[in-house]
Length: 164
Image (cartoon, rainbow, N blue to C red; front, side, top):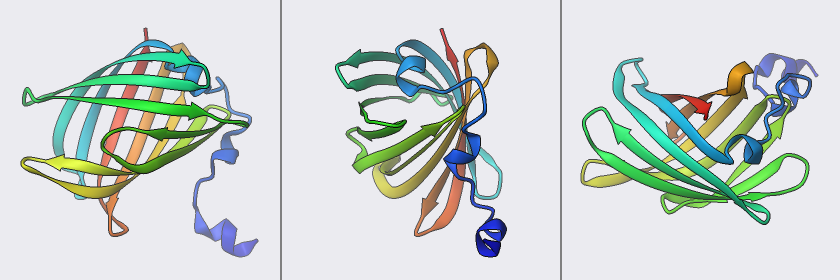
């Protein structure tokens, strides 16, 4: 017990009583707008972006079509196929995701983990994402993701979503 109390590692179950409840497929069904920032490991702002997201449910899957516009004019697109599982669990795939993403929602929070081929100019690098999403009042969802390479944090992505 002492070791787990000192570890400081956040668990999604810690948020089970927090409201409003985040149900991923409910929140992302329809149109969502997002604004994001990427800070390097030293806290320097490296990039900002906007995302237009269109989500639809197809049986037990949530399909998210994300269209990115970066501050330097670059455009990108990612299409997630997220399998809706039991008890707030999710698994997902996208073209640049390595293997499957896994997620668990509880209360107003969702923890989402995956490996990604992150584009860097003319190449890509494999990184680990540890996403934490927290639903707030007025359909605002805040996401903070640590990006790691070989277990070392290389940056943080912060995104604010607004369900339209």
